[in-house]
Length: 155
Image 1 (cartoon, rainbow, N blue to C red):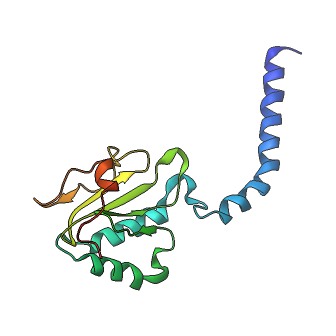
Image 2 (image 1 turned 120 degrees about the horizontal axis):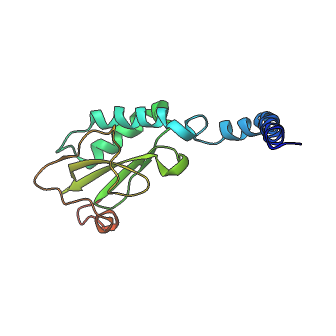
Image 3 (image 1 turned 45 degrees about the vertical axis):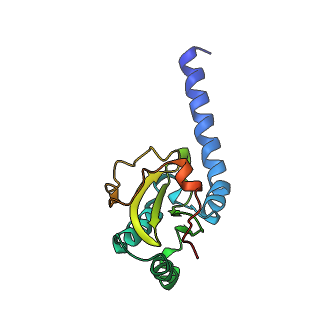
């Protein structure tokens, strides 16, 4: 068998194998939280951006929490992670290559002083489609140490 026929046979075998595996793989992907958004992150990003659009500098910590809680099932694809820290986060479902987005909400004296959107693979990774950071003069630069810092004014 010459090389061309051998390559064609291999390509055909791979194609048939892929079609045989897909019916088993798709239910697994649709059952996980990311589902079809495993690559694009569309729904989670839309929800994150809708919530981001409601936030304003100076908004109180408890107001942010109430806004999220009152939104109910609207935010089924994004996960809110409040804490007693200086920074809260909202993250979209995990995606291939850690391309999911995180919204960091920075507080100072229980009021929002910064909004930052980053990719999961690092706080220095700003998604190209994300809006610019919104900060006031009370915000500190976003660092890993800041993410771990506890708030002295948390309740």
